[in-house]
Length: 395
Length: 191
Image (cartoon, rainbow over all chains, first blue to last red; front, side):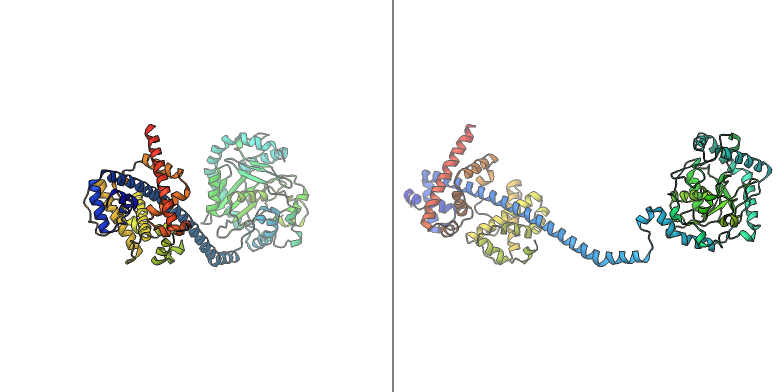
């Protein structure tokens, strides 16, 4: 084997590609050891082949990486497809029947109904009437002591001058900081305990004739709540009940209270105007002033479940208001397992007023709605001196 | 991806013989876990494992094309064995540590020191040179030197009339590449 033969037959190339037989290979290597020119050519050939191989390897690696990346993307999308399919099957086979069963088994008011106050009232009123008829009505008479009676006379006079007055809210708000501490101290005083005892006693002595004042009221006489205005918005602050909204057919726009000692001609409310009396689980009744903070009152209501709201109504209430009176003037929100019994007790104490027994059970849950409900009732105008059937029954 | 599970070893080999390059990624995905587990359990990381698996697939591709491959075991066993040998060879070169003796012929016989020491600079030169030659030359040179296909196969793939044309074209292409490589190297040296 010589240089000419090697070059003509691509021996360098074939050697590097391992395509020489053993004899050719041996002869080639023997020649290569003694030929610098061939050695140089072989090195050059090797460099070229190495370059091509290196480039080829690099290209193929890139190709593999690209393919793998695409395959994994597909794999992911396939996985998601599978997951979605399985989820869809699961939803239709398990979740949907479960939801259908759930919604068939419970009574949930539609959102539209919940926001449509008038509809909600109309829907629930029948149930509410049923509840009222079934309840034993508690009759409460608060024997007012001389000093207390005196206070209330003063209050009545003031209220006359401030009737429907919007200035009440501002005046009450100004007194807010003062009333908190004083009212709290009043709530803890022996006077409150005395009131509680009196209430308990009055319950026992309640006359039978008015135990169920609305029991005989024909359904037709109960005005439809369709005509009732939108509910007021009630905000219970630390020491005031702020009521806003459409106040037509409502007694006051703002209820507030202050200590008797601060009372002036511009201050229509006293500590006795609005109180919440709660019947403890033991059966004993205790009172809470609305001057106490909101959380306390909410806890009180929710813990005691049954509360009594005592309101001193205003004089000179127009007769026409009576047409939309109890028991229609509150809304009822029912929610399973979260019932709150609310008893509302109305009374007044003045020569022109009579003690009004009034117990109404409400089933309430939402805390703010609770106050709306209370105040819908409290601020609803009612003329107890009128000749209407309901007024007579109440009287 | 699901279809990968249905390709037998034979089908994979057949696709390589038919020059179906889409098989590359599929083989990688199929044997990824096996090779990665081995390399990572023997001092390598993801990058090493990826490199070893790619190298193994390339060896498979080359050996199937140059007739050195004999499917006497499972393809997976072959791929993992090549990866193992390449990994130990790599470790010996890198760390001069002792490892199992390489007893089979799965190691890439074409691997040489020059290839290993090709710097990024040289890679750039080679890349630029391949970009400058005709695409048909690039393809032909790759088929002959990298994939080690025969002139008959190349003639078929590139639709040349016969092997003589292929041989002649290969010679021209090689000369062209060498010229460009020299020029690129000189240009690089001047810079």
